Image (cartoon, rainbow over all chains, first blue to last red; front, side):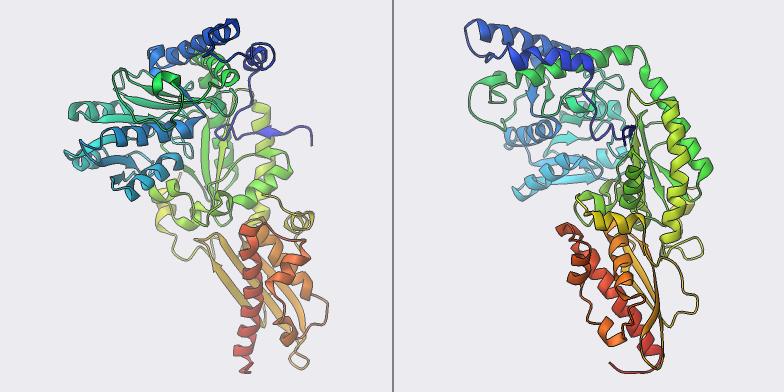
Length: 403
Length: 130
């Protein structure tokens, strides 16, 4: 099949042509180690610092507050473990949420084994953290609040400005995983009172294997990687120059995209797809906040059937999406995000995430709308469950999620 | 996830999918919370104890649908008696599908359980002991 429709941009994006072109010389002729004093090193050092500035510009940070990492996961690990170990003498309590990416949750769980205490804030049915519970959870031992900006599964955007304000008032460091929001919606680290922020290139049309951690000037962290003096002694290891150039270019393009409001068009396509699906198919539920949601993410539950089977059938027709079902997560657990939002576990097994990108078209949405209903009908015919024979305990959430 | 061609074939073209309204035995196994539920229905010849018809319905992933389809294909039209059907193992189902990814082997176990449950249900209804 040559004509595939890619709707999994929150998993990863294609590399933009300009990004690829910008990176190529650094894979061919500009191979110098930026730490070298000679001509080759000075050349790549200059280019890497130029890229650093481009990343900083997207979030109104200073270039020397941007530290390159191998991606969002390393940025999350560095921020959380880095602040935790650097501030052990002051306290041992961390506040996060139940819907974080596993890079945050598993890092926090690791720290719990090391003697730190972690509060996992509950969220409402839309995935928004409870600010009252946050305020009441703060103790004099709290050293870090880490709450994601935009959720990768359902797209809900957290009230980062309010959380930042609370953190600042209490003198607590505030980290946010902005992997899904950086370069898509406006971010200003000063207005949001953010102290640390995780960034990833391959979600914004850059290459995989490169990301960044914003650390506000003056904040000390214990590094994750020890070795050479790279990244101001915060992250040892010879810089991934081609990756850095790619992230820089992708950031520059993303800043223009936000200024040109291209996500308005993507949001329209997403809304068109959402309306088309809910018009044509019964017993579907849209997950996430109706307004405070990333413009390109559409997460839905199709009742009575399972997510992986939907994905495989769509894949057979050239349509590429993902799911939060247990079968696709590698564990036997349904999505921790959907469960935290109070969605019935059986219904959550039927979740599908469509995440749009810059190249998607209305024609593609129409193609999906012409193919998806029959797939759902077929899988529902195969299922022992139906509205006449529903899931054993599943009436509450269906009412809540009526459209 | 690497599914064999046989698994994809059974997933895309399931055999014996449907309902038997007057089934002699019904096995319902699995848990929707875990993402796998199989319903196996059989019609049994009371004199010969041969399974004369078998159908399935499944809520689950590619492997779940494929294993339940395969287990019915192993029985349908083969003149298999209840006692011989009980000998069908999940390993046989998985092998018949040219193997399953390790994290999907439990689906073949569920298919074996579903068939067993249908046979037990028949036995209970006909007050026979194993």
